[in-house]
Image 1 (tube, rainbow, N blue to C red):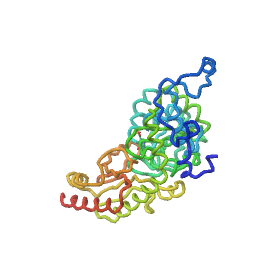
Image 2: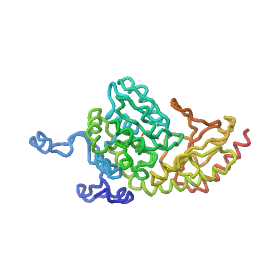
Image 3: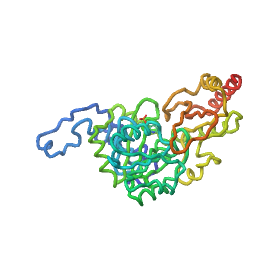
Image 4: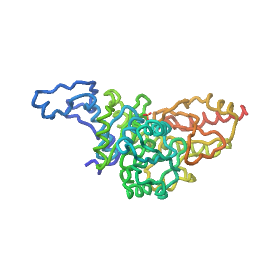
Length: 386
Ligand SMILES: *Cc1c(COP(=O)(O)O)cnc(C)c1O
């Protein structure tokens, strides 16, 4: 049924179980470890719907089902952080002796996990240029088990040709994993483009209010059992209060994203006219190198983009950032508030070319004119500090 509904409808309806909760629209917060069983025969037959908090409560199940419906996948597991969801998904497809291809523009902690934990577990990681498409074939070895994608890339926003990569990976028996946090299932339908496991940092747009840390991974039918098994074996789970907040955020995901998109585009277009700016990294801008792929594959853009500034002294960058009134200086993104942060890029496959500093902006839900006015005054401070 859910496959025929639009994401706006799914975001409102999916995962609700009012009839089990006296008609309450939202599934209540089930703070529970022990879930008592009615009698011994039910316990022995394993027929109880819930047996122990780590293995699921109505709070986590509502969230799981809502995300599974939005992603149109076969199974979703909810994890205590986005990074844990990434680790869970990778462990579902890679083991000792395997080779793993990871995009060079991946989220930094994903790289750390591969370089340290995965290496110790006997998996060899090779990083590939984010602009690689079908030519990923020359990096595939007989023991390559999976290809990891993130599009657009963290900090640098390169678009990946996921259908092309997936076709090659599948022809060689390798699975395709995607960090889909920037687009969410609303803006990019991972499974329709060849992805096998789609990962979200719920912390970002699904949570949407900067008040929780959580992640999830959703698998297609072929990867469902392995994903659920690793999640079960490692004891990854999320608290009931956080599940409740994540679901509350998810109900308004579609409308919030549309507003983030609009404001980010207004800021980007204005920034593009400024002499202080070298270039904007945003795939929805017509002159972005990834624009054609974005147009072909995505249903829209979100609120996060990069700004490469012309070379300036560090003190001028500080004068710009420190005096801003409407942009918080901080990590994470996807909440209702605007943020700005300098980006430090680690690359091993292909260096990222920029002479000036790169800053990342998250366009929040404030009025775009107020945000632009704040940036304009900031550029004045930047110029005075040079
Ligand atoms: C923040 C982020 C993560 C990690 O999420 P946490 O919930 O902070 O662990 C993963 N991928 C991307 C692209 C992110 O921005």
